[in-house]
Length: 112
Length: 115
Image (tube, rainbow over all chains, first blue to last red; front, side, top):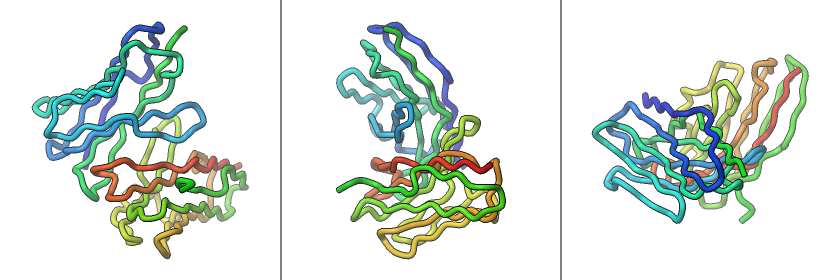
């Protein structure tokens, strides 16, 4: 089955700096890659997703890139703010009604 | 819509007792998922249903765990007998067209502590 690896496990950045989280996946047929943010004590919530027919997607300060050849995808957060502090999960799926496999999470701390 | 509703929010039980976690998905969503979250293992998919039918239960750790979805608006995850290593946060999530191509909406979770 699909295996998703995520790095780093923890990340500290100064407010205003950029943060990058990287993930790799094992199944070349995977075609849907969502990212979830989980604040302390709360539920995971989708922040952005990308499909395999797109190489990059942006939403304000958040962007995701996908390299299908290398089977890796990354989350980029620019101009980080304290409210960006949370655990971020990448995930991969074969699409449709196939299951979503999550990475192990990255705890991001933005230092004011 | 109030979102995915889970109950109870917190459960403390003694080892050996039966535990039942409940979930009400968002109306109209036809996919439902049960996840377990721990510090060591992250978010693990236990089982998921499409149109009330279990599709993949390969994540269910052992026979002590069972899940049902008797209708489109209700699901349960049961642990019998419970063990301390089952202590975790259990999330239920639902999706309108399968989580493989669209957002999965998570409930608030049930924090289970087995002593």
